[in-house]
Length: 177
Image 1: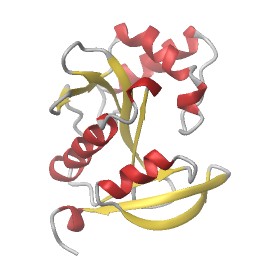
Image 2: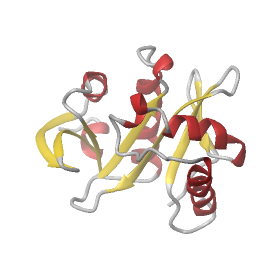
Image 3: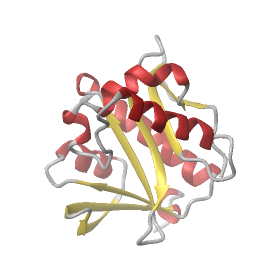
């Protein structure tokens, strides 16, 4: 699977993580307001975050990279979030995920990033089924999935909690039914 160095949107650069991201990533992983609504575990130490970042950066050089990228402001390069995707163990879907720093929410950045990631996943990587799983309480993510045209599939039990399941198929994305 090919991971680009970066993907640009109108206001954002979605790029691979680099070693200089360690402190910002550590703060990100230790912000309960961010991690509570995601599958990301909170890291307890800078060393744990550093080990995770090393694995991530090393994976970019392999045939099986981890597709996790930093969401950055185009105008100043500030890292404001994270996004990526991963194959699902229990289905043929590929899960897209995203999280933003709280002060950058509600400004359309998540929508912009997810739309661009979805485009890349379907048009470049030929992924057939892209899913979003989110907590029913995470109204912003539920609304984002609806706003970009994902089809609601129902509520499922995932990671020991109820989870809203949305799906975009390649056919629907390309304009089919």
